[in-house]
Image (tube, rainbow, N blue to C red; front, side, top):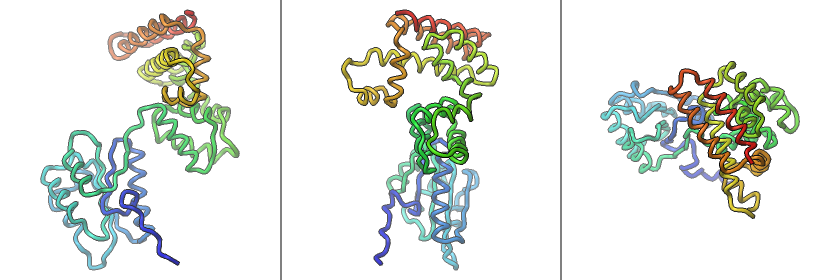
Amino acid sequence: MPPKAKKPAAQDPLAPCSLLVGQEELLVDRAVREVIDAARAADPDTDVRDLAPGQLQPGTLAELTSPSLFAERKVVVVRQAQDLSADTVKDVKAYLTAPAEEIVLVLTHAGGAKGKGLLDAARKAGAREVACAKLTRPADRLAFVRGEFRAHGRSATPEASQALVDAIGSDLRELASACAQLTADVEGTIDASVVGRYYTGRAEASSFAVADRAVEGRAAEALETLRWALATGVAPVLVTSALAQGVRVIGRLASAPGGMRPADLARELGMPPWKVDRVRQQMRGWSADGVAAALRAVAEADAAVKGASYDPAYALEKAVVTIARAARSR
């Protein structure tokens, strides 16, 4: 039987150096775990050293990576490498030019300007790089949820994935945990009704539920949902963000060129086709003036919840009412 083909360094978790770039803790932790698991699969006695920046002093890396009489495999994880001292950075850069055998170095780096010299040096040395940036776009979080369900070997409808993101929000650990719970507890395809049963309290109190009711012109329901959301601890700034997103996407869809195919329009707007259909239904009563008035209301509410008002709740209620009226301005 021919030997297994060796993975390219860019894909091999046992590459001499892995560079994990970004500030999303879940993705960083998973990438670190992937390296450790691969090392221990190759050698169950692998020694793992997980170090904060302050624990890696000048000379420490040389000690950790020096040859051993027992030729043991070792994984050395250096957290927040952008915070290393200048002398320690010199040590790491020197090591990168001649990495030791049986040693896997893992550097986590925030990815900003701080410590960029080390980042560049690791890349120049051919480090395996893993992107761990925060998922700020709703479409990226939706893709993350779909990926979690696939990783568990399960299928979920697009509506279910969207409902879960709406209910949980932007915390990837909570999203991952919710996907794991649903796949463990539910048989068959996971749909929106299942998500609703598990997370109805959070979904009904979520900022996106407030925004949906407002842009559909359902003022009374939007106000009721808003008050419940605030009472259950939803941050006002999340509500203004959801309201802004809801109004902006209506404006973008209204101004999109006519005659575009649904799939092309979905790509242009950065959302799944089913969401385009939903927004089309929401925008039926909107006019251009209504969109402009709603955006002004959101901007005023956003300033209010960030310190310009003593009563953020009132500012949000005022914005919700204005948006609901604008939804019937045509």
